[in-house]
Length: 242
Image 1 (cartoon, rainbow, N blue to C red):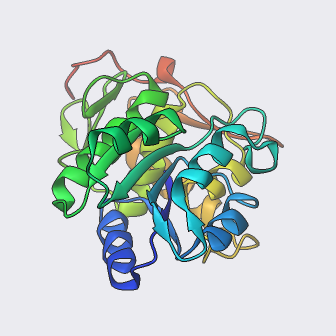
Image 2: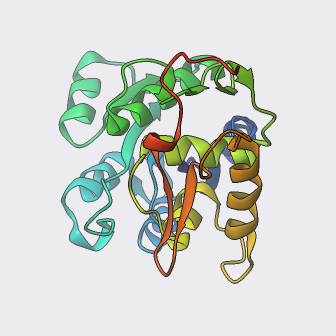
Image 3: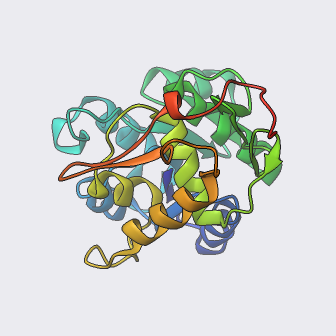
């Protein structure tokens, strides 16, 4: 999942980005409204953390633009990014206005990173139709809070990027995901789009998911289109390796 941190306090923005990257997210940073608009106009984000007191405008105006401005809209098949407001404005009336103008959640500064992380997970699960911290597809189980993934009860040894990639596959199980879409949501702006990093990472993840008893790997390549996680090639939920 790809997150845009919009925060004018550079040290705080860097700290948030480091913490979110440790949890497997792809993170870009903007320190003002103009920088955020530039990034939003060229990349698809799953979530935006948004400070309100920005040097060149009010973050609430940006939240409303995210909701109403077609120029900032993602591709037709992409949902709009969730917006988590991070601000020192703690009045009830201000929170109500923020939610009415496009925010999905509101966190008052100062806050603990653990709470921010939990709110990020909660907002991202909404699009996947999940109600808990655990994603399940067949005998695949991914615990976003504990940063653990298992298949048939056996722990999978995944890198942070493989974990993030698996999370995106599970949240969009059955869909054909193009290399461009995976690059948009699992990697950040520092990734060279002309490298083979997507193909290589999908390949290593596929090998780690596949068991000797599988008739086919659960992640299939759809030639000319992308990759798809197939639930029908995974065991029943709760089944154990045997």
